[in-house]
Length: 625
Image (cartoon, rainbow, N blue to C red):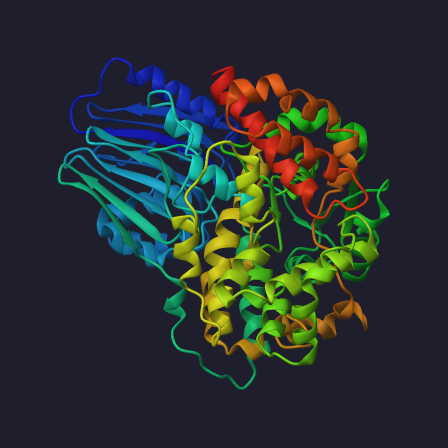
């Protein structure tokens, strides 16, 4: 687990390259506190920051070259089947100098190039350079667990684990206003778009080949590879076997390993399986003693007692947010407004004090239909008197109060969203329920108009949807929400604290199996995650799998009036807004009033998105690096 950056040039590198490489390395420094290195060739240069997990000796440091010096690799991630791959390579005559997965990847790429990618079980982003042929091969893992940003011009190609590492090789960046609008809508920017014009995110399951002939981007994995739906006599048994093997593989490390335990189904199952293979594994949770509606540590404690693991709960109070706010906001290389990132960051910081690797339950919701959105979409397809009544009642329901901070008003908020969504076609409904802010509200916030309709990056994901195939909804969520929100959040926040997070539910054998199963095996009117429940309900007390869970949320409405208020006052000052020329000051003032009212709806989340953007803008455009 590391940070990577580099540049490939058609001609010899100029004198400024070394300084740019140093700056790019600085931008990824948090991702690898254990070692750092650079390698400069005549027409290419690479930087690496290492978080040592497998073979912690300096033999595994990067950039890594082969004995001939012709090939060079910078790699971020873990290859769980590296020992089996190494055995095969040894039989082919390869001599290894370390026990690292990096060296296995290096020699596999030397021999097979991009054909080696399907053999990898793990998560990764890398750049592999052939000095003699002057070619660069870059790739990203199947689901986007590890990030890869790049910029391609006629003169060359720059890449990095973070967007600011890429822009270290470019002239002053320019904001992409369309990307800003979709960010305010979704709370993140879907690949391949970024907030900076002329830069991209490599989509999951893609590789790029760079040579004198140009840049070629190709897909090497798709969730459609799972093939046609097929029934199985006992799918729960197969699911359990695959999940157990995935957890077993992800416990392999030369450093201490723990788990994140929220008390929900996903993290409880991961912790149960980890405990089966490692008697001493600890579990870590985060709670809000001052905000009972958001605090679910009682469930986490119950799960920990039942599983039999050492359990630590980290309590978050107002002073923690005040102390950590700037550090957390500085971890974003581009605006990202999933508010639970604050919690993941603090949880990662405190977990890192005890272990260097944590297993999480991320991916199960997207894979198994675990979100409220999934149940709502399924329910919306079946018509009936209730749907007809709610559709007709949407204008009246819109007058009712809505808030995420109160049980009754949160219920009303969901009913209002559902009734409005029923008036849309299926694709529009999906987008509405995947958004925090309506497009028309985004347009009111911005001074400059933006093109109407869906952002191209969002439209490309929605094109996967088929109302007659609920697996298409899950595939869309994997491509959109999982890759660009959930995994990005976990990667950026955990790596900011020097912690590696592994996601057992995203082993590709497990994912391909689940996607090959009919939707009814995963979700029906009674709820989602059926495979998970059927496979593991006998391992937990009666009723454990029947209780509802809020999700990993932060008490934003309260924070807007307390811990976040000074920063909001500063970054939404009318004088600043006028000079900046991005936001409508009057619309923003109305948003602030609504966010702390008794009927806030999702206004606190929209305001949080503005705050995150303003902090990012100030770092990159007002103060400079």
